[in-house]
Length: 270
Image 1: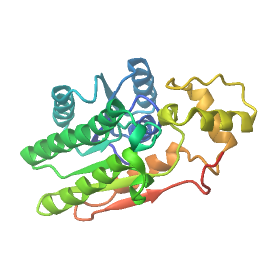
Image 2: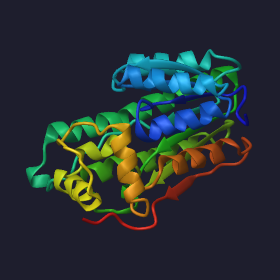
Image 3: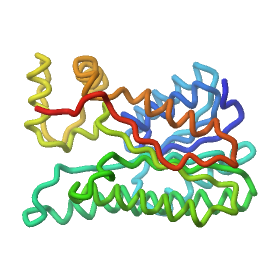
Image 4: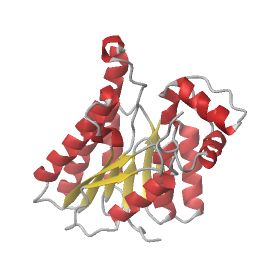
């Protein structure tokens, strides 16, 4: 129970990476404020955390609703001694068509979720941490796409996240608030629902799985586990990301962990 007494807010926690982070920290004793789009899934995670001796509060709202996101952070800050950490995990990605043929509505949605909502969450967390004079951490989930200059519109949103992180680190040097960017490669997550359908179908066929994948739809937890188990060298287990977040949270407030790049052993190719 290494995080007993701590309060951590996690966005995008109803599936995949965010859910794994929330459950891992909650089962280690933290009280987790979880938000996401699927209330049933959030409730299931809450039950799992509480069964392990942790605590959780769940909220379902559109991450692009600024007022709802700010209220979520403020409620987390009102718990216990205050907000110890915000993990901005909520993210969205579409397969990058050539920009000349791209979909502006999808571009806008990616920037709204990946950049603007993250900014709103960061600002709210900084405000409540300063008001309570409470040391804290902000962990923003970026992507290895931010390491490639030609990574399309999705990659551009993650370049923006890293620029925001670097700016915040400069702005917060005199505060007890540290900012970390974690850049994962390909990990088991329903993020892949917006990947090129032929890549997903290629994975499914390669593994001989009986999955009727339809673009834009979520895979079940069981289907995601089956894909990961068959491609463990190409698709990482989200538990590794949760362990990276745990490592950051264990550091004293005068130590910053600026960036962590974490990825599977091999590139995913089909």
